[in-house]
Length: 107
Image (cartoon, rainbow, N blue to C red; front, side, top):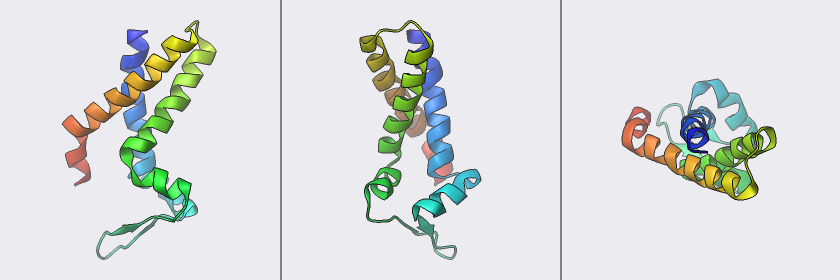
């Protein structure tokens, strides 16, 4: 279980970072309604649940970690409580990675 948490922490951070800020998924953010002003860099989010979810890196990482934990649960012999622990621990690990090492890359 610990090895899944370690691997999923990095995977959660990477996927969340892709969705949240990186240019390769700018098309998805634009489709959702997230707009970035090219001159000032200000970002505006739509007033719906998806826009509010995307506005917060931490919230988005919980959803990404959940999807990854469910996929691990479906493909391994983890029980439900272990999958729940993997979900929360991998989301927390991704947040530690982001705050400690990677947030400064976003500015």
